[in-house]
Length: 247
Image (cartoon, rainbow, N blue to C red; front, top):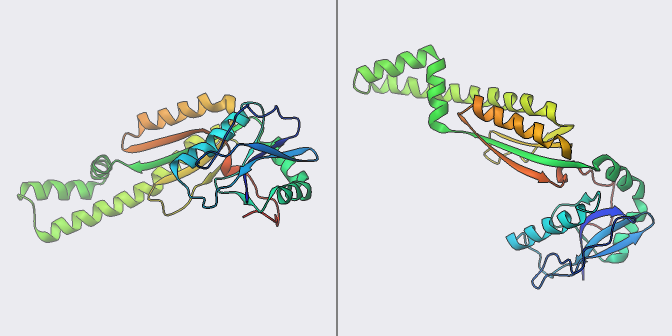
């Protein structure tokens, strides 16, 4: 049976909470696999692992419980090794890398920020700020809708304005939030979001970061900003070079 890995801790980390269980149906008991100064938080893995809501939440719950006792290097959902011995070998082979990562991420959390335009609001903003679009809108209204050519011109003008606004607003969001974080990086592309950014910051800096988000909301009502966090810093864990035995 494969070994499912939730994260990595120092061997001096407090003992796991009694009765802690993780993924699976029934849920698998969580344990540690130790090697030198490191330990992996693991459980047995079901024969067929799928990203079901129950298992995703179980993965997060285990990391939250372990993280309450000290620094944990979180691995993303679906991190597997062939068996416990393979996990021990990976910890032995890449111990220095994992210890350095634990030190770097100690006391840090991740916040993910996504944004999209509120469609009607951004269209109104574009028309208000573009004299030609505003003139076309007024002319079309006065003409009872306007000609096909004028409606087409207006549509193209607005579409171009919205695209320009997307670029502008993405820079505004990044510029407003990046100073409140130690690191930031984009999330997966092609998700349909205007912005999808993950930020790494010290836990005690969260209030300042969230205040900056609220100011963005107040000054940019055409933006729909969604914040998820605090999260384990998944996006900032660097994989061990040429790690073997994990998939």
